[in-house]
Amino acid sequence: MDVQTLTFLIVGLSFALYIGIAIWARAGSTKEFYVAGGGVPPLANGMATAADWMSAASFISMAGIISFAGYDGSVYLMGWTGGYVLLAMCLAPYLRKFGKFTVPDFIGDRYYSRTARLVAIVCAIFICFTYIAGQMRGVGVVFSRFLEVEIETGVYIGMVIVFFYAVLGGMKGITYTQVAQYCVLVFAYLVPAIFISMMMTGHFFPQTGFGATLIGSDGVYVLDKLDGLSAELGFAQYTEGSKSMIDVFAITGALMVGTAGLPHVIVRFFTVPRVKDTRISAAWTLVFIAIVYTTAPAVAAFARVNMVDTINGKDGSGTAYAEAPAWIKNWERTGLITFDDKNGDGEMFYTAGKITDPNSANEVNVDRDIMVLANPEIANLPAWVIALVAAGGIAAALSTTAGLLLVISTSVSHDLLKRTLKPDITDKQELLAARLAAMVAIVISAYFGINPPGFVASVVAFAFGLAAASFFPAIIMGIFSKTMNREGAVAGMVTGIGFTAAYIIFFKFVSPDLNSPENWFLGISPEGIGLIGMIINFAVAAIVLKFTQPTPVEIQEMVEGIRNPKGSAEAHDH
Image 1 (spheres, rainbow, N blue to C red):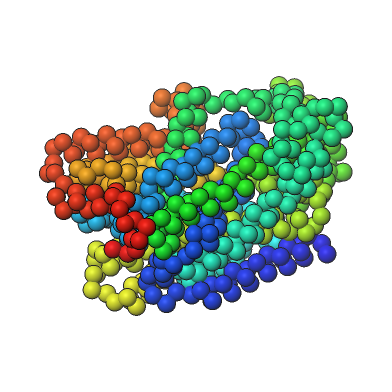
Image 2: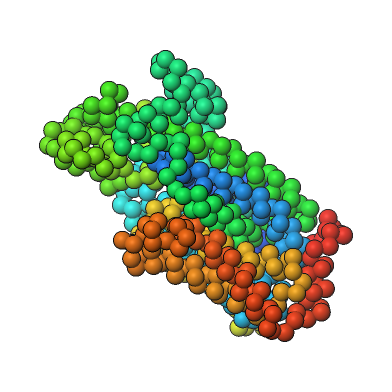
């Protein structure tokens, strides 16, 4: 069977599995819709959290960034992994012991304020829609190539699938669907990586192949080969960074603390039966994440070597466009690879684009988001492997989209309606409101998928920056400071997310021509500015606290109760 037939078959079977699970696990109450009834086993929750966590940015775009940026791309690996550890150790168990459904729920009750709850709701929705924009672009990229449909059509198909299991099943349906999606995406990520590692280095494990010598190269290591290719083509050396140290630190920091403030990941820890299960669940999640994250640098390096060799030819003299490999023509149809024959010789040549000689100027533009998806085709792997990668990419994007949609729907139905505007609505009415909110959110997210504001990992990095500047300080102070009051927390969240959003919007959308290190504040890029937003949040909260009323005694006692480990193993809902 050809690639397209196999893709329809494998993707279709995975969709049928997701919808079947959603029907089996459909939610019958608000508790099942919001937190899966609080009865998800730690191992299953670990898989579901890993799938929720490893979005299109992790599956599709992270290796693409590392493939193109080399050392500079490592900030994503360090930030996202370190952030997950921070979340598991410092936030998740305490929030689970608090026993609420959502992050705005915690902030509203901890800061004894309707205003604080409303600010948290706005922050949650803003962050989630920013994140969804990246996921829906990922869905569009996969569908446009492998199902050979327009990106818009692909986004609509994704909408329908997510609608079934997010709106029907709620957190219960999403959780068990994400377990299946993790199995699909990890298998889809590892199989081609193992194939290519064996072909290029003779190593079964891509992690060891990454540091090995290339077959038939007289002992040349993979990374040495990449450094040589990069230098020849006018790029910075693959193993040397071009970013300033402060920007690397800021981006890594923003991704770390942003991870710990992401509402759709935090809510996953409310689904386990006991507080101690949050740590067990977190440990399993880290294992499942590490399987993919330790493979990503190898996938990036192998894809880069193969891509340059197939475009420029093994001897580096270029490849005749008429004889270009099938994968180039396939991706060219999507517009994600373009060829501009600048010297009219009919030969493709890929360089940094900075070479002054017009006969060797860059003629091929490659969208970095395609590297993981195109990798099996570049390496001439079997058609079923290519189809499997397509199913994995879709699983990664849809699993995270579903988690984000749930946060949006619960923010509207539970936090805004039930806890703020209409506290007398029934459980059934609240469930209906949650489903309607999810439907509206799906439509809006489809718009972002069709009109994406950037490539996947970049957009997702902004969501992390916004979470770092708003939720993380409020949650940390809410858990570890008995004295932090509502005025301080609200002022901190508003100024933190306001500064961060304004900085990102200015440099990325208002004046992109000024988006360069000499114009950045302290040399920090928009991807890393969330760390400064977080510092501003903490500082403003501390200053406002000095000039406002102290926290009520009963709230201080409640915070003491959250931090007290006594009875945490038996704690259920409070």
